[in-house]
Image (cartoon, rainbow, N blue to C red; front, side, top):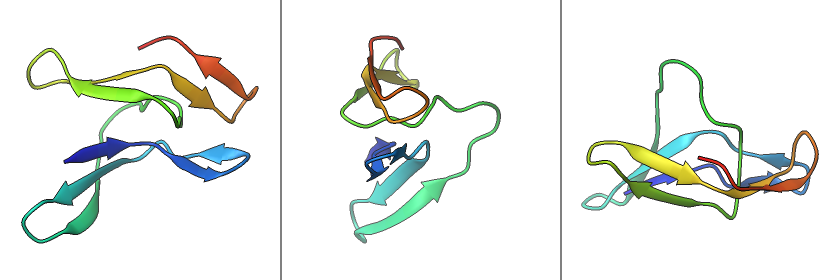
Length: 71
């Protein structure tokens, strides 16, 4: 299972991609090349198209504490 982002504090969100091994119940951080989306929480993530994780919307603590509506 993959999880992107999340709230670190009221003023900061994570921009890391986490992976949970469902057999061992061990979390790890996925190393990514290139640019990452900004840190968000309250967003949706799905595999679409096949083989691609797509993140939509959410809330950004920085720079302006605002809701987002882009991919």
